[in-house]
Amino acid sequence: MKESPPDTATSLTTGALARRLGVSPTTLRSWDRRYGIGPAVRTDGRHRRWTPRDIAVLEAMCRLTSAGVPPAEAARAAKESASPGAVPQRAPETPTRSRAAGTLPLGDVRQECRGLARAAVRLDAPAVEEQLTAAVETHGLAVAWQEVMVPTLHAVGRKWASSGDRYVEVEHLLSWHMSTALRRWTRPPVRHGDVLGPGPVVLACVPGEQHTLALEALNAGLGELRLPTRMLGAAVPVEALTAAVDRLGPAAVVLWAQARSTASLPLARHLAGAQWGVKGARRRPVVMLGGPGWLGRPGPGMLRPTVFEDALDTLAALYAPERPTTPG
Image (tube, rainbow, N blue to C red; front, side, top):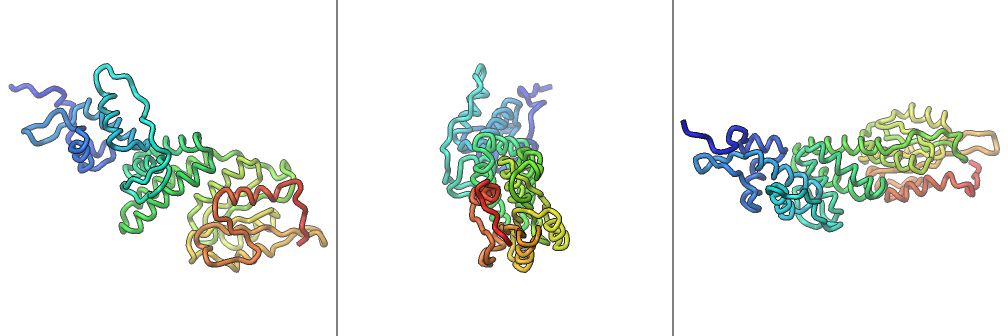
C-alpha cells in the first residue's frame, strides 16, 4: 500500500479550510498566487491539501490582515512566523491612515478601520472583538467611536445598499460587537443627587427608530464624565417618552432619528415645551437632535451638533457650576 504524503491524514481541502478561516476559496487561491502562501501537498498535481503548517501560516495571515496589516506584509510575516525556530514577531507597523482599496468602500480612514472591516466581512467575531477593544484602549472612547467604529459601520452600510441583501449579516455582527464594546466601557449610572445642577440627560430613539448605537456611545461618553443619564433606547412611544420627561425633569433630551421618515419635529417641539418647577422658576429641557433623519429639518431653539465631541461638550456644559439657571 502506497504511503500517504506527510500530514495528508490531517490536512484539509480548500473548501474546508475556507470555512474554518471565514474566507472564500477564491481568497485562498489568490493568496497562493500572489504571495506564495500555498499548500505543501497537491494531490494529482491539481487538488490542494492544506497541512497543519499551511493552516498555521494562513491563520497568522488572517490575524495580521485583521489588525490592518497590508496583505503583502502580512504574508511575509506569516511565513516567517511558521519557519522552524522562528521567534514570534509583532505585527509590522502600519500607517495611521490608509487610502488603499479594499472589500468595503472605506476611503481615507484610520488603518484600524481596514482591519476591523476585514474581520467583519469574514464574520470573525473574535478578531472584531479584539479590534474594538484595542481601539478603545489605544485611542479612548470618543476617538474609537468617531474615527474607527463609525467609518467602518458606514462602509458596511454603503456596501449593503449597493449589493441588495448581501452584507446584512456583516452589519448585524459588527453592530452587535460595537454595542458590546460600548456597554463594556460604560460606567454604572450616576445618581442625580451626586451631581450638582439640573436633572439627567435622557437619551431616546424616536418612535419607529431602532438604531441605538450612537446613543449608546453618547451614554458611555457622558458616563466617563460622571454625568447622570437615563438611556431609554429604541423606538420609545410618544406617551412613554413624555411621561419619562415629566417624571425626571431632565437637563436635556437627546432624540435620535436615523431616517427622515421617523424624525418628528412636533414631538421635539412638544418635549422642548415641557416645564416643571415652582412658578416663577420653571425649567425646560434642552432638546438635542441627533442622526441624519433631522438633516434639513431645523428645529428653532434646538441643538444639532455635527460631531460626537460637540455633543459631549454641549451636554457637559449644562452641568458647569457657573452656568446660570434660565427661567422658562
